[in-house]
Amino acid sequence: MRIALAIMAALLLVTGTAQAAPKHISASAPSLHPEGVQWDPTRGQFLVGSLRHGTVSLVSRDGKVRPLVTGTKMVSTLGIQVDRGRLLVAYADIGFGEKKDPGQSGLGIFDLRTGRTLQLVDIPNGANDIAVDPQGNAYVTGTMGDTIWKVDRAGVVTPFARDPRLGGAAFGNNGIVWDPRGFLVTGHYTNGTLFKVTRDRVEELPVPKLPGADGLVLTPRGLVVVTNNLAAPGKNAVTTVDTRTWRVTGQRDWGTTPTTAARTPYGTYVLSGYIDVLAGGGTSDEFRLDR
Image 1 (tube, rainbow, N blue to C red):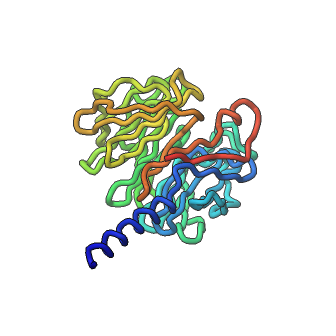
Image 2 (image 1 turned 90 degrees about the vertical axis):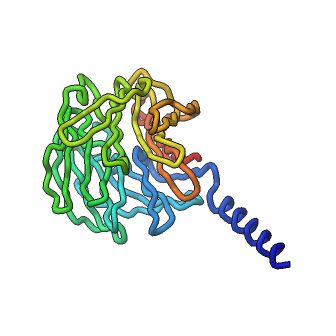
Image 3 (image 1 turned 45 degrees about the horizontal axis):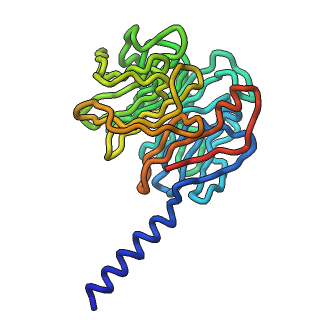
């Protein structure tokens, strides 16, 4: 009898988890157009940015959207990270915002619970994405330059690694993740090269080129690389790479134009903020997260 009850409890737990985590989440907010997403483990919700409004919003698993960070000088919000009560946000003016501040580029540091601004730190060359190491140092890609910038917990900015291969005539190093083995992995958006980065050392990884490499996420299955064709000759797809061999183990074509993904307790969710509509001169109130 006890065994039967235990089996029933396990089945209920699995069923409840599946119901709490739909494979597709459809959300709506006025012309939000999120480019970055992260999982908030303190709330069990998603955090998304906005290319149009320069905000950060919470998205529940049933698609309800609630603003968390508003009223700052940020024109467009891009990559997002959560670190021990802090919310880290890359921001810049890339021409899609309601506000204008040409040349704006920085890292916003906020209180995760309240959304209160703790610090806004200038970052050169078009801040785009963020990785955080175990000590709380943030590493920020500058898509319009050849440098990865380090921001310590005090907000001091220093160049971490600089290499011509990280730059380019258009968009250079973009997505970035911290590998627990003690190094960074970043992707070059235009040519699709993946790099292993330590202080002042950049090495090309033996991964097939993935043009349009935008968001990078480390998962139990490997490194997830989200690609799109927004500004590169890539394709809308999600590719998984084995981080032991650096071989591609799977690739899935995507029906929308994805930009990045977030790892959650329920699996990895890919964000489609309809940036293609925004780039074409229109707007949309819809966005989606798909597992």
